[in-house]
Length: 578
Image (cartoon, rainbow, N blue to C red; front, side):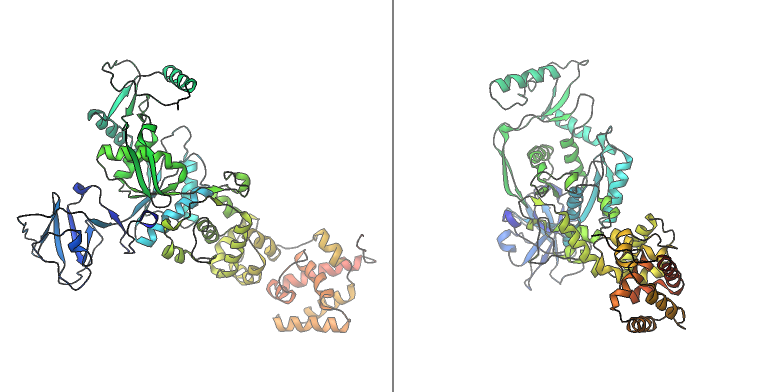
């Protein structure tokens, strides 16, 4: 698949994947791909099936009749027995050895630890899991790895779920909690113990420290030397751990869907602890048991987990379980090339909501950190769910750049339908003390601010003047430059003209403005800017006519009257300091 050289398949029911555990398959369906019939009462090998059929794992989503040649098969030892439609088994006298591929529904998982917030790197992993499974019709599972009871908290769990929901990444299943499955982990460990694939280790911490010091002195890589493997005494009152017997020779390798073929020499790995002396299962054991029990067949995670993978493969094999596919993503770095931290923007995903970013923009930006689709920069979620393939991710570390995220966010704000932005902008306004803002007014003014804001925080600040009773005192810099240097006569003339309007309409407002400007021999800006300050308290707003119209007659005339009073109380214009 992809970089591994395995066959690709775009069937919406799943990825074409090898069957590793034949015993787990009881039934397959042969779906002919051409008009040729597959003969009933026959056994097929790869060559015979090539070009005329695929094998589909059972159980599957409901599949209607393809054509009259649909046949049913039962796996019998190392061969396939074909049935006719009456389901009468007709086992042939001889069977051809069979090697096959099946289409399996992709099941992947996002498995955060609830010891902190959902940060931007974790959100990227969840996004990739979501997008890849959406494209292939798979399932995305949320598993909370909360075995560290001292550091885990319900607050962190809630923040993770809320963050995923805000991003639109609600899982198909879960959340499941590792803390609910301890008995399954211990059962697996004791099964390995009973089968001679694990052993009890009674080495004390002092013994292990002494061993490591000796190895360092000899310039040997520090690791456990397996001294308890052959132990025959098992003192009941002495604390111990359970260790896995790691294969001593050979190579553990897998075709990673992103990194390509990865190999580990088994003699570089020591005997993994499965159960600690306090009876708590370790991370690698819990992950393997959960991935098996949840049917996970594609693990998408950061490349910092690569070193865990050979150990997990060993456990899958020792327990006789199918090994998932793996896709290890390159990590995120800051602009200076160092590991992403808070100073680079690695804060809670929900902080981006607080800061006025759109979920669509955050997803758009995160997906571009390692993945591309031609030269396209801006994507909708629908496009990403159609095109994203984890196998197309690059292998280099991605650089997180807040400026680029701001640019993408501004684009998404400009392109959004105002109704899409309305809930988020209302939320931002309410945070700024605007209780129950008029939804119709917010909806009406939004198109005027979409081209002028890179974040919803910026938009909320720019349109704040619409929802307050007064904007006095004015912003100091704007007042000095644009308001107090204005002549009061044209300002008051405009106030009188607008007060006299029979109907508050855009065309009438614009005509009043133009008439006052012409009567006093002014440029439009000489009148528009002091009026803008009086209306908004700042020097920026949408077009002055649009601002007056949207603000409405009552508020506009009230603020203009306040401005006229201030101008008339100022005996002479205040010169701007040099």
